[in-house]
Length: 304
Image (tube, rainbow, N blue to C red; front, top):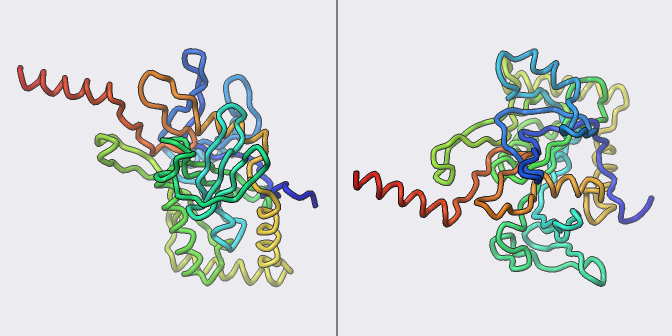
């Protein structure tokens, strides 16, 4: 096995809640309030839609805000990998990756390990440069039980919620996470930062029309059938763990460029940066100009 080359789950498609659009000659992320499933092929108009995108939309009367899924691994940390990440805007490659305790940083002499103070206390990452970055692999449909769809996000809400759900479902099922019939859900909420506008994040739950008890029963039955067929879930988890650990960074150079474009766009210089295209819950922070205009509008209303 080639060292320094991360072996990641095979990906057959992408899950996003946004897209990258071209504005004034720049490619910038644009938010959305529904899921979109795409292939890994891009055209001039963006990522090409996956056939499952249309079939899932036919099963719902409105926007695609729920997706029935299964997971590849019993270990929650294998299904969802989350870390703090700073990308080099020029090359698109990760410059520093950390977990809040230690980080791996690319320097002139190679990769070095240093303390990781998290984005709030990191001078190297700078304001807004270093973000939480999560990747979730899920199985959709029965066509390829080892092929997964990848959801990327830099959303605190999505990462925190998904991590909690994965660990909770793993606990209540007796470590049968890979056998649970689950559902990705898009949820909305308002915060002070969003100025009462709805923001969206990704959650994980029991499939619609089912209960937790029914889901656990189905998981035990599937686990029994898999063991009878010789399916070794523990060995699969071990192989995945070794594969992730084989490289310093998970994303390949060709993927890193697309990730940097989608989640780490260049500042436009005309107001706040766009929210992440892969997640729709990050409200744009107000600039000084926004604050002054808002204050002027309030004073003007009071004078009237």
